[in-house]
Image (tube, rainbow, N blue to C red; front, side, top):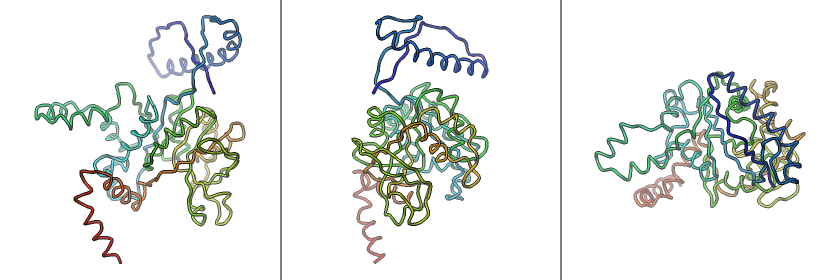
Length: 349
Protein backbone atom coordinates (compact mmCIF):
# COMPACT_ATOMS: atom_id res chain seq x y z
CA UNK A 1 0.00 0.00 0.00
CA UNK A 2 1.33 3.43 -0.90
CA UNK A 3 0.81 7.08 -0.23
CA UNK A 4 2.39 10.10 -1.84
CA UNK A 5 5.31 12.30 -1.02
CA UNK A 6 5.29 15.87 -2.23
CA UNK A 7 8.38 17.42 -3.79
CA UNK A 8 7.46 21.09 -3.65
CA UNK A 9 9.38 24.15 -4.86
CA UNK A 10 11.61 25.49 -2.11
CA UNK A 11 9.94 28.06 0.12
CA UNK A 12 11.76 30.18 2.67
CA UNK A 13 9.38 30.99 5.52
CA UNK A 14 10.08 32.74 8.81
CA UNK A 15 7.76 31.58 11.58
CA UNK A 16 7.27 34.45 14.02
CA UNK A 17 4.19 33.42 15.98
CA UNK A 18 1.67 30.69 16.74
CA UNK A 19 -0.61 32.30 14.14
CA UNK A 20 2.13 31.85 11.53
CA UNK A 21 2.46 28.21 12.53
CA UNK A 22 -1.29 27.63 12.17
CA UNK A 23 -1.25 29.35 8.78
CA UNK A 24 1.57 27.08 7.63
CA UNK A 25 -0.33 23.99 8.83
CA UNK A 26 -3.37 25.19 6.87
CA UNK A 27 -1.18 25.68 3.80
CA UNK A 28 0.10 22.12 4.01
CA UNK A 29 -3.46 20.84 4.51
CA UNK A 30 -4.64 22.66 1.38
CA UNK A 31 -1.62 21.29 -0.43
CA UNK A 32 -2.62 17.73 0.52
CA UNK A 33 -6.04 18.29 -1.04
CA UNK A 34 -4.43 19.62 -4.22
CA UNK A 35 -2.13 16.61 -4.34
CA UNK A 36 -5.09 14.24 -4.21
CA UNK A 37 -6.67 16.04 -7.14
CA UNK A 38 -3.58 16.21 -9.34
CA UNK A 39 -2.05 12.84 -8.44
CA UNK A 40 -3.68 10.92 -11.32
CA UNK A 41 -2.67 13.63 -13.82
CA UNK A 42 0.89 13.79 -12.54
CA UNK A 43 1.34 10.02 -12.61
CA UNK A 44 -0.21 9.62 -16.07
CA UNK A 45 1.79 12.46 -17.62
CA UNK A 46 5.04 11.60 -15.77
CA UNK A 47 5.66 15.28 -15.12
CA UNK A 48 4.97 17.83 -12.39
CA UNK A 49 1.62 19.61 -12.36
CA UNK A 50 1.45 23.13 -10.86
CA UNK A 51 5.09 22.77 -9.87
CA UNK A 52 4.33 19.78 -7.64
CA UNK A 53 5.84 16.39 -8.32
CA UNK A 54 4.01 13.40 -6.84
CA UNK A 55 6.14 10.38 -5.96
CA UNK A 56 4.83 7.04 -4.70
CA UNK A 57 6.55 5.82 -1.55
CA UNK A 58 5.84 3.21 1.10
CA UNK A 59 3.77 4.40 4.05
CA UNK A 60 5.83 5.29 7.08
CA UNK A 61 5.08 6.30 10.66
CA UNK A 62 7.47 9.11 11.62
CA UNK A 63 5.90 10.57 14.76
CA UNK A 64 5.21 9.03 18.15
CA UNK A 65 3.21 10.61 20.97
CA UNK A 66 3.96 9.84 24.63
CA UNK A 67 1.31 11.05 27.13
CA UNK A 68 3.38 11.63 30.28
CA UNK A 69 1.21 14.10 32.20
CA UNK A 70 -0.32 11.54 34.57
CA UNK A 71 0.01 12.16 38.31
CA UNK A 72 1.09 8.63 39.24
CA UNK A 73 -1.08 8.50 42.35
CA UNK A 74 -0.73 4.71 42.63
CA UNK A 75 2.96 5.23 43.47
CA UNK A 76 2.66 7.88 46.16
CA UNK A 77 4.69 9.00 48.01
CA UNK A 78 7.48 8.14 45.51
CA UNK A 79 5.82 10.13 42.72
CA UNK A 80 5.20 13.26 44.80
CA UNK A 81 8.47 14.72 43.47
CA UNK A 82 9.59 12.18 40.84
CA UNK A 83 7.45 11.54 37.73
CA UNK A 84 6.32 7.92 37.53
CA UNK A 85 7.86 7.72 34.05
CA UNK A 86 11.28 8.38 35.62
CA UNK A 87 11.10 5.50 38.10
CA UNK A 88 13.81 3.03 37.14
CA UNK A 89 13.54 -0.53 35.93
CA UNK A 90 17.01 -1.85 36.81
CA UNK A 91 19.11 1.13 35.67
CA UNK A 92 16.93 2.93 33.10
CA UNK A 93 13.80 5.01 33.65
CA UNK A 94 10.57 3.49 32.40
CA UNK A 95 10.19 6.15 29.70
CA UNK A 96 13.55 5.16 28.18
CA UNK A 97 12.31 1.62 27.49
CA UNK A 98 9.29 3.03 25.66
CA UNK A 99 11.37 5.50 23.64
CA UNK A 100 13.81 2.70 22.74
CA UNK A 101 10.88 0.71 21.37
CA UNK A 102 9.86 3.67 19.23
CA UNK A 103 13.41 4.14 17.94
CA UNK A 104 13.59 0.48 16.93
CA UNK A 105 10.36 0.97 14.95
CA UNK A 106 11.90 3.82 12.95
CA UNK A 107 10.28 6.77 14.74
CA UNK A 108 11.96 10.09 13.92
CA UNK A 109 10.00 12.63 16.02
CA UNK A 110 9.15 12.11 19.70
CA UNK A 111 6.28 14.19 21.09
CA UNK A 112 5.84 14.30 24.87
CA UNK A 113 2.59 15.58 26.35
CA UNK A 114 3.65 16.74 29.80
CA UNK A 115 2.15 18.51 32.79
CA UNK A 116 3.26 20.33 35.92
CA UNK A 117 6.11 18.64 37.76
CA UNK A 118 7.37 16.83 34.65
CA UNK A 119 10.27 19.11 33.70
CA UNK A 120 12.73 16.39 34.67
CA UNK A 121 11.59 14.35 31.64
CA UNK A 122 12.56 17.20 29.35
CA UNK A 123 15.89 17.54 31.17
CA UNK A 124 16.50 13.80 30.83
CA UNK A 125 16.23 13.93 27.04
CA UNK A 126 18.50 16.99 26.84
CA UNK A 127 22.29 17.13 26.78
CA UNK A 128 23.87 17.61 30.22
CA UNK A 129 27.07 19.41 29.31
CA UNK A 130 28.64 19.36 32.79
CA UNK A 131 28.01 15.62 33.19
CA UNK A 132 29.49 14.79 29.80
CA UNK A 133 32.55 16.93 30.46
CA UNK A 134 33.06 15.21 33.81
CA UNK A 135 32.84 11.77 32.21
CA UNK A 136 35.36 12.82 29.58
CA UNK A 137 37.76 14.16 32.20
CA UNK A 138 37.55 10.89 34.14
CA UNK A 139 37.97 8.74 30.99
CA UNK A 140 34.59 7.07 31.54
CA UNK A 141 34.11 6.44 27.84
CA UNK A 142 31.61 3.58 28.27
CA UNK A 143 29.25 5.70 30.36
CA UNK A 144 29.62 8.66 28.00
CA UNK A 145 28.90 6.50 24.96
CA UNK A 146 25.80 5.08 26.67
CA UNK A 147 24.41 8.54 27.38
CA UNK A 148 25.03 9.67 23.81
CA UNK A 149 23.35 6.53 22.44
CA UNK A 150 20.21 7.20 24.49
CA UNK A 151 20.07 10.86 23.47
CA UNK A 152 17.71 11.72 20.57
CA UNK A 153 19.25 13.90 17.89
CA UNK A 154 18.76 17.66 17.87
CA UNK A 155 15.25 18.63 16.77
CA UNK A 156 13.77 15.15 17.28
CA UNK A 157 11.89 15.91 20.51
CA UNK A 158 8.91 18.19 21.12
CA UNK A 159 7.10 18.96 24.36
CA UNK A 160 3.59 20.31 24.87
CA UNK A 161 1.50 20.73 28.01
CA UNK A 162 -1.76 19.20 29.14
CA UNK A 163 -2.83 21.85 31.64
CA UNK A 164 -5.64 19.77 33.17
CA UNK A 165 -5.84 15.99 33.75
CA UNK A 166 -8.83 15.42 31.47
CA UNK A 167 -8.02 11.91 30.29
CA UNK A 168 -6.01 10.08 27.66
CA UNK A 169 -8.14 11.35 24.79
CA UNK A 170 -7.49 14.93 25.85
CA UNK A 171 -3.74 14.26 26.18
CA UNK A 172 -3.63 12.92 22.62
CA UNK A 173 -5.60 15.94 21.38
CA UNK A 174 -3.01 18.26 22.97
CA UNK A 175 -0.44 16.95 20.45
CA UNK A 176 -2.57 17.87 17.41
CA UNK A 177 -0.60 20.90 16.22
CA UNK A 178 2.73 19.10 16.44
CA UNK A 179 1.56 15.91 14.73
CA UNK A 180 -0.33 17.74 12.00
CA UNK A 181 -2.02 15.84 9.18
CA UNK A 182 -0.22 12.52 9.22
CA UNK A 183 -0.67 9.15 10.94
CA UNK A 184 1.19 8.70 14.21
CA UNK A 185 2.06 6.16 16.86
CA UNK A 186 0.80 6.45 20.42
CA UNK A 187 2.70 4.70 23.22
CA UNK A 188 1.42 4.64 26.80
CA UNK A 189 4.54 5.16 28.93
CA UNK A 190 3.43 2.90 31.78
CA UNK A 191 3.62 -0.18 29.56
CA UNK A 192 7.01 -1.70 28.79
CA UNK A 193 7.41 -4.86 26.76
CA UNK A 194 9.83 -7.58 25.84
CA UNK A 195 9.65 -10.06 22.99
CA UNK A 196 11.50 -11.38 19.97
CA UNK A 197 10.26 -8.35 18.01
CA UNK A 198 9.52 -4.94 19.47
CA UNK A 199 5.76 -4.41 19.61
CA UNK A 200 5.66 -1.11 17.71
CA UNK A 201 8.01 -2.44 15.03
CA UNK A 202 5.57 -5.27 14.32
CA UNK A 203 2.69 -2.80 14.24
CA UNK A 204 4.47 -0.60 11.72
CA UNK A 205 5.12 -3.62 9.51
CA UNK A 206 1.43 -4.53 9.63
CA UNK A 207 0.44 -0.91 8.95
CA UNK A 208 2.59 -0.81 5.82
CA UNK A 209 0.48 -3.69 4.48
CA UNK A 210 -2.98 -2.61 5.62
CA UNK A 211 -3.01 1.14 6.31
CA UNK A 212 -5.86 2.34 8.49
CA UNK A 213 -5.56 2.21 12.27
CA UNK A 214 -3.71 -0.42 14.29
CA UNK A 215 -3.93 -1.37 17.96
CA UNK A 216 -1.66 -3.91 19.63
CA UNK A 217 -3.47 -6.66 21.49
CA UNK A 218 -2.61 -9.57 23.75
CA UNK A 219 -4.60 -12.44 25.18
CA UNK A 220 -5.76 -12.49 28.77
CA UNK A 221 -7.64 -15.07 30.81
CA UNK A 222 -11.34 -14.85 29.84
CA UNK A 223 -12.34 -14.18 33.45
CA UNK A 224 -10.05 -11.12 33.47
CA UNK A 225 -11.44 -9.50 30.30
CA UNK A 226 -13.67 -7.13 32.27
CA UNK A 227 -10.55 -5.25 33.44
CA UNK A 228 -9.43 -4.16 29.96
CA UNK A 229 -10.39 -2.60 26.67
CA UNK A 230 -11.37 -5.63 24.56
CA UNK A 231 -11.58 -6.06 20.79
CA UNK A 232 -13.62 -8.49 18.71
CA UNK A 233 -11.75 -10.67 16.23
CA UNK A 234 -12.58 -10.41 12.52
CA UNK A 235 -10.88 -11.75 9.39
CA UNK A 236 -7.28 -12.87 9.76
CA UNK A 237 -4.38 -10.73 8.53
CA UNK A 238 -0.69 -11.57 8.40
CA UNK A 239 0.42 -10.78 11.93
CA UNK A 240 -3.04 -9.85 13.17
CA UNK A 241 -6.72 -9.55 12.33
CA UNK A 242 -9.43 -7.08 11.43
CA UNK A 243 -11.25 -5.56 14.39
CA UNK A 244 -15.03 -5.53 14.23
CA UNK A 245 -15.81 -4.16 17.70
CA UNK A 246 -14.14 -2.45 20.68
CA UNK A 247 -15.54 -2.48 24.21
CA UNK A 248 -14.04 -0.64 27.18
CA UNK A 249 -14.09 -2.86 30.30
CA UNK A 250 -17.11 -5.00 29.38
CA UNK A 251 -19.31 -6.44 32.10
CA UNK A 252 -18.25 -9.87 33.32
CA UNK A 253 -19.24 -12.59 30.88
CA UNK A 254 -20.05 -10.20 28.01
CA UNK A 255 -16.61 -9.67 26.42
CA UNK A 256 -16.56 -10.43 22.67
CA UNK A 257 -13.08 -12.02 23.02
CA UNK A 258 -10.13 -12.21 25.38
CA UNK A 259 -7.89 -9.91 23.29
CA UNK A 260 -7.09 -6.72 25.22
CA UNK A 261 -5.48 -3.47 24.00
CA UNK A 262 -2.01 -3.26 25.56
CA UNK A 263 -1.17 0.43 25.21
CA UNK A 264 0.23 0.72 21.68
CA UNK A 265 -1.67 2.41 18.82
CA UNK A 266 -1.20 3.69 15.28
CA UNK A 267 -3.89 6.26 14.53
CA UNK A 268 -4.92 8.40 11.60
CA UNK A 269 -4.98 12.19 12.13
CA UNK A 270 -8.77 12.35 11.84
CA UNK A 271 -8.83 11.25 15.48
CA UNK A 272 -7.94 14.84 16.48
CA UNK A 273 -11.11 16.31 14.97
CA UNK A 274 -13.18 13.68 16.76
CA UNK A 275 -11.47 14.33 20.10
CA UNK A 276 -11.97 18.10 19.73
CA UNK A 277 -15.73 17.62 20.20
CA UNK A 278 -15.62 14.47 22.32
CA UNK A 279 -17.83 14.64 25.40
CA UNK A 280 -16.49 13.44 28.71
CA UNK A 281 -17.06 9.77 29.38
CA UNK A 282 -16.01 7.37 32.15
CA UNK A 283 -14.36 9.10 35.09
CA UNK A 284 -15.57 12.46 33.75
CA UNK A 285 -12.62 12.33 31.32
CA UNK A 286 -12.25 12.50 27.54
CA UNK A 287 -11.72 8.85 26.67
CA UNK A 288 -9.58 7.78 23.72
CA UNK A 289 -11.62 4.60 23.29
CA UNK A 290 -14.79 6.64 22.71
CA UNK A 291 -12.98 8.59 20.00
CA UNK A 292 -11.67 5.41 18.36
CA UNK A 293 -15.18 3.96 18.29
CA UNK A 294 -16.34 6.98 16.30
CA UNK A 295 -13.32 6.78 14.01
CA UNK A 296 -14.07 3.10 13.39
CA UNK A 297 -17.36 4.12 11.76
CA UNK A 298 -15.37 5.60 8.87
CA UNK A 299 -11.99 3.87 8.90
CA UNK A 300 -10.76 0.30 9.35
CA UNK A 301 -9.05 -0.93 12.52
CA UNK A 302 -6.74 -3.92 12.75
CA UNK A 303 -5.28 -5.72 15.74
CA UNK A 304 -1.59 -6.60 15.88
CA UNK A 305 -1.20 -9.74 17.99
CA UNK A 306 1.83 -9.09 20.19
CA UNK A 307 3.15 -12.40 21.50
CA UNK A 308 5.71 -11.06 23.95
CA UNK A 309 5.25 -9.97 27.55
CA UNK A 310 3.90 -6.63 28.79
CA UNK A 311 4.52 -5.11 32.21
CA UNK A 312 2.20 -2.44 33.56
CA UNK A 313 4.69 -0.25 35.40
CA UNK A 314 1.87 2.00 36.50
CA UNK A 315 0.99 -0.70 39.04
CA UNK A 316 3.23 -1.78 41.91
CA UNK A 317 3.15 -5.47 41.09
CA UNK A 318 3.83 -4.86 37.38
CA UNK A 319 6.71 -2.52 38.24
CA UNK A 320 8.32 -5.07 40.57
CA UNK A 321 7.90 -7.90 38.05
CA UNK A 322 9.46 -5.74 35.33
CA UNK A 323 12.51 -5.10 37.51
CA UNK A 324 12.96 -8.80 38.19
CA UNK A 325 12.35 -9.85 34.57
CA UNK A 326 14.77 -7.33 33.06
CA UNK A 327 17.37 -7.90 35.78
CA UNK A 328 17.62 -11.66 35.23
CA UNK A 329 18.15 -11.04 31.51
CA UNK A 330 21.33 -9.11 32.33
CA UNK A 331 24.55 -11.14 32.32
CA UNK A 332 26.14 -8.58 34.66
CA UNK A 333 23.35 -8.86 37.24
CA UNK A 334 21.80 -12.34 37.15
CA UNK A 335 24.69 -14.26 38.77
CA UNK A 336 24.60 -12.03 41.85
CA UNK A 337 20.83 -12.16 42.43
CA UNK A 338 19.73 -15.57 41.14
CA UNK A 339 20.36 -17.49 44.37
CA UNK A 340 18.80 -14.74 46.47
CA UNK A 341 15.66 -14.73 44.32
CA UNK A 342 15.35 -18.51 44.61
CA UNK A 343 15.73 -18.23 48.38
CA UNK A 344 13.02 -15.58 48.58
CA UNK A 345 10.65 -17.72 46.51
CA UNK A 346 11.42 -20.80 48.60
CA UNK A 347 10.55 -18.86 51.75
CA UNK A 348 7.05 -18.30 50.38
CA UNK A 349 6.27 -22.04 50.28
